[in-house]
Image (cartoon, rainbow, N blue to C red; front, side, top):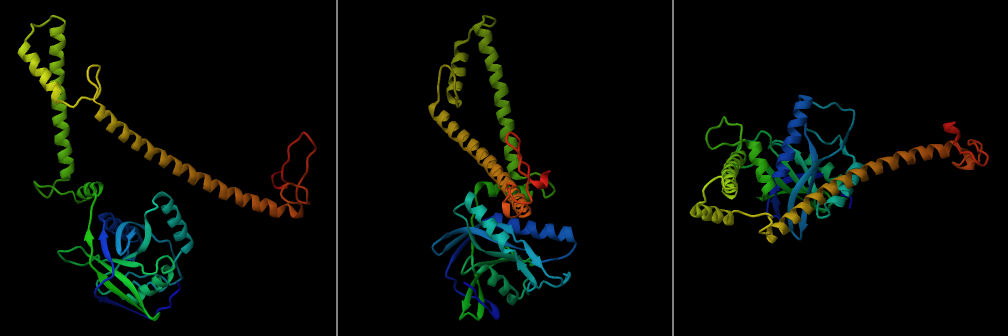
Length: 340
């Protein structure tokens, strides 16, 4: 629905929704702000879309992507953050959302984000609401404060409520952080946190993986020694020691067995096949997505060429029967006039 708002205010009150926030959203917004600041050497506001899962009155923010903006001729300065001269490219936004829904059908457009300080002006966000309310009647606004100093995250989320179609209230709502395993690993690597000192450039995850790798390598080397001993006993090069052979056999029984001629671990094989199928399916999905995108670009270019050729061939159509085309005799090929 289209809404014309004249005033906007930011208040703190009881919200009608509950919110969960993934760290990936914060990382994407911070990366967007830092990249624009480094590229332009200016402090410019950045904006983008919020993607999430809506289940009743609960919203889970999962991901983001940047808006494609259309600016007017007014030059931007390093001190102003006015957004009244900014228009969102709705065609790009609609197409982007359609492509995302094809890959992630459970993700919906839930609102937009911006990077503003604590003295931000809520009235500047009314133009964004007027453009985005057709996609979501009550979009959320996530504001990241780049200069705020606090023990809490500089993230503020607002629910937009329209009062009689003339006033937009931005009500700040609380949120809870939820993480997945991949996000925890990524955050740990980004933070470069170390329990030994603050100058280390390796994360806890890297240290743990290195410890596990060294342990597995040491176990593998010891198993090779035992294997050489068993081969030497079998070939008669060393004297047989039954006690030692029983300990080796007990050790082999405790080790996870993949597939051998004597023992077939069916549970491991089933889990391995499932993981292998999942990885292959993801790789196939990525290839299919890339091929579909290439085919779509080809069809768009072909349509442009076809329309131009049809327009240049006159009333006779694009097959050369009008004044602009050329008809060949039987046995020869046809070439449009534009290619001859």
